[in-house]
Image 1 (spheres, protein in one colour):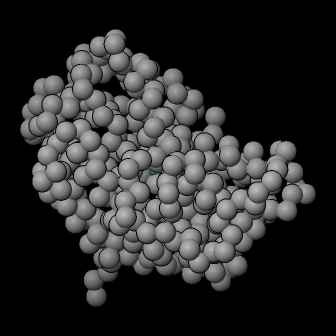
Image 2 (image 1 turned 45 degrees about the vertical axis):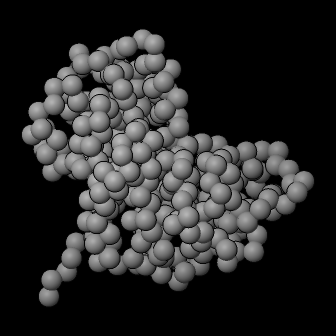
Length: 326
Ligand SMILES: [Fe+2]
Ligand SMILES: [Fe+2]
């Protein structure tokens, strides 16, 4: 019997842009009765005596921080409950569930979708690539075709996954668990857009100097993985640039080729599969630059803003599973 390999989470998950909260992206918090903060609730700082916060309230908070009108399709409260001391990681598997319990956490928050609807919902969020391409002036028909070329293999891979393995375990262990994907990536993408805008606009720098500036971001300084130039030369001008994040996963060759063909010179992305990189290299576009910002430090930028908000609400946060918190 052939067992299909599960898609590698590191390659699939990333995030998507602000306009990503499209009608196609459903809300998964409808079943939870308490999704808004009670009026007048106050938190004065970390305290073990606070009454706890429900995970569904945390989801609503993250959505508000990112400007999401509803919970995106790749984010979900799998098992709701009050938490005071919460474990936050980029990826959560059975090991992290047991680790969290060992460390005395009463709830778990992941960045990447763990299972259930959120994991299967990743394909829908890849539609964000079309929105982002159109925002850069790429015709809708082309953007739609290229988005589908990226979405189809991901949807097929997800269809084969053992999608509820870890969620089943959380239910059996009785550990409240959720993931916050798009909202954190929207926050992270906006950080990069603001940062690159500050160091690039009006200065016409080279790609090499841009990478030097990116390395000064605290999450990057703390990370063993650094921003790198995977396509193009350091002396190339940055030119027209785009931050391609917050769209479920990276755009791969179909999407990035399309940007280059429409006069976007520099793409910043968290990651790309090697096969797609080879395909882009074969195009031999001398002015095309691909800056890979690094997966864990880049995801940490968004999640750290969420963690800051949790701590401001009085929660004790244990960071692990790849979160780089300078
Ligand atoms: Fe992400
Ligand atoms: Fe990611």
